[in-house]
Length: 114
Image 1 (cartoon, rainbow, N blue to C red):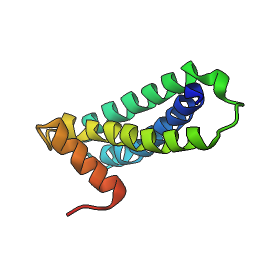
Image 2 (image 1 turned 45 degrees about the horizontal axis):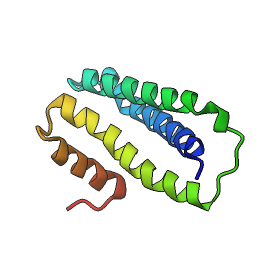
Image 3 (image 1 turned 180 degrees about the vertical axis):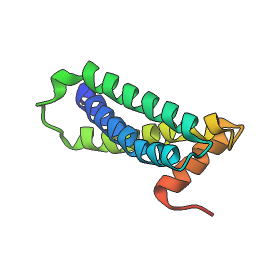
Image 4 (image 1 turned 90 degrees about the vertical axis):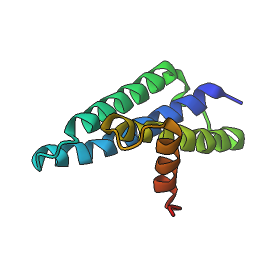
């Protein structure tokens, strides 16, 4: 399995998540919400992490994604996206525990909330 291909794709996915996190960040600024700073920090951290991961593995850009890599990208992608999705919850103080924030984030992304 080519791990550089896996991490390159996960880096792109993380950057995409960071860009999507920018939408509520901008809206919270427009509507003068109190959660702007946690959202801005979360967006910046997610974008930076995605950029660094993608940049570190940039030589894998033109390589082929086989079945093994595809399964690893999807599995690791869910874990990484949920991890970065916990940052706004933790910074805003919505949840005091990482486990609670991670569970709620994964629940939200998979739409399996209670």
